[in-house]
Image (cartoon, rainbow, N blue to C red; front, side, top):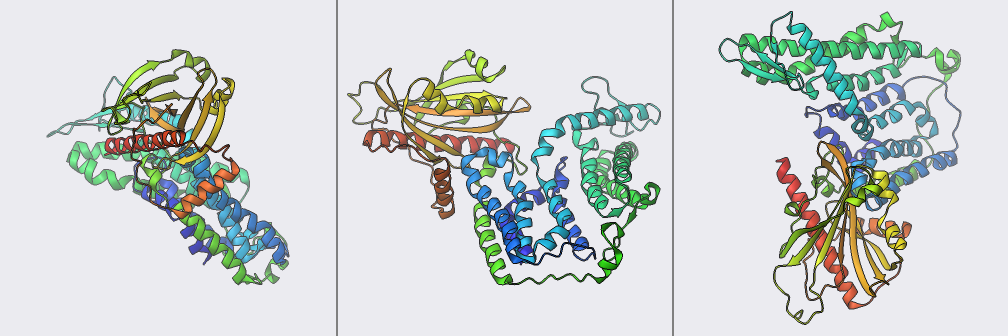
Length: 549
């Protein structure tokens, strides 16, 4: 029941890892982490070892309940408070081991959690964010080392010829019937296998006997072996293409030879454990390093705890609510499975609103002094295609301005917030509230008074990560209007979602709304911008999906 509760609570998160197992990316092996953790549970749960003689259920609840509730709070409130950044940082995966530790503590007691601390901690390795932040330099180093080794080898073993120019990753395979070229990309350079070995090797290192230095040396040796086997794999593909042609080398050999060499490396390093003075522990054996052997032999695990039905009711209830909140996959329109953004730079062509015509009306280069070199501030003006009825005598035409600030410095974006800017200009904020813009984007609607002009204005804004020029940047999109006139923009259909309403209600309690406007014109303007924002988010999402396909 505990395993089913964990799987149900994080089914969408776990599926996002599984979907990437077949992808040719460095993070593909993250899908193995839950499976390896389950194997470690089976190993550790039956080991006989000394553990604290704690059988007080109050302590179990004091430790377990806050862990479960913390995970639930993050999953419920995080997507609203952090909007797209919650999914970019994949905080749902960060809470997986926290919820697991709490559920095990409630159901089986603190003693069992102490025994399973290694597999629970191992689940943290499934969190994609550290890899996506740190892999850039690692990938480049591996690629450069692999390409340099290949160029040296093919100069002696003529299975291919290095092509000069570019980044040096191109090799020409001289098949007698049909020569072809092969580019050794980052995915083929050995990063995939090396990261996979780190995950599997770290699990092995957790239940072998030996000194810590020896375990680290074994991991380093495994990384070197897997990298060397990857070089052999690429040479084998070159050789097969040279002898049997491109179709056999690329379509027949390439898809499975990487998995073969990876498994050969794993088996070879297991066999090599004695060379590093390491040995495997037996699952049911006594570990003399963990305490007195006689105590361990006398110890009989007491897995059944008192009032277990109450504990399971708590676990199942929180897992059900957590699973309902975590089931939302709408964010995948803007975010890939492992958190990378799908969006590219904002443009009028990809942010269309039916019935409105956008144009770039201004740019502000001075924004760099606040948001760093390379930052931009573009202003777009959206005008309705037809003059609305009843707006003939208006003092000014109805229009919506869309300000887009882009920067690579997320800290600067946080330091110069929109509401802080309004305060600096002495604007009086009349109302703020959080709004659902669809596709996992939570924005803010603000109604404010500008004393310099004596007018009320309404703004809806949000922030999200984008892919721009091969690197990740961040955009703040601000919609402004002074009046809705008789213009309306139909909002993107939002199905009634009780869990979503609960999430926004809880987020409002934490970051509470201020003020409440009742003026019909201000309410109409806010609704206009809300529908406008939903339309822009939907258009950007559809454009991103079309580009991906």
